[in-house]
Image 1 (cartoon, helix red, strand yellow):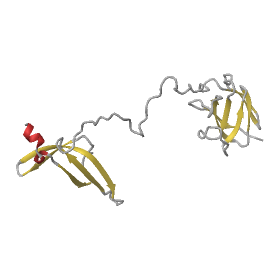
Image 2: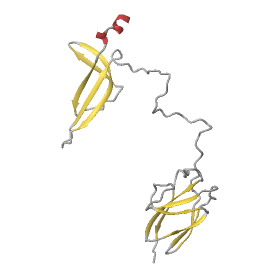
Image 3: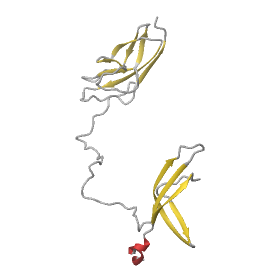
Image 4: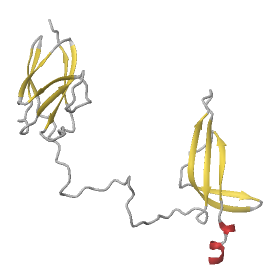
Amino acid sequence: MLALATSRAAAQSGAYTAVNPQQGIWPGDVLALTAGGQSLNVIVRTVTLTDGHAEPELTTCRIAFANDWAESLGITLSESVAADAELPESAASAPLAAPVSLSGLTVVNVTATEIQVDAGVDPPAGGGFEVRRADANFGPRPGADLVLRSPVRAFTIPRASFHEAFYIRQYDAATPPLYSRRSAAILTNNPTA
């Protein structure tokens, strides 16, 4: 067994190309190769799919395989840490907790020109509430979708049209500021005139 394992003849690797395979083939699957009455089990290492952009669909599947003598599935250990590795942060450098989401936000009053809001919580020291027209792009930078930033719990959102959507998140005084994980949404369907 030891002699066979160290022999270059024991290493088997190669590739197979199939067009529109009937089953999904994944890395780690075992392929049973049979040739000349001999069978050999090899492990799929990579699968590359190429779309032929045809009607009906034409997908080419290139399957690279090898047995353990040709290419090991084991791991390689090293004394150094890879430059692109993401390491867990220590407790001392752990990020601060994000402000709470605004589950208690209530609309106090709606008029043709404004929406009066109570955030349901007091803002953190040095922080406040940010209102945007899209549920994205929250941050200190301005943008076309930024409506207002309020440092107080009760604030007024100006209205401009019949159907509008406003998204509100709480932020703190950190640099850059941390925002609540989820937005509170106000959707209007109310005349403006």
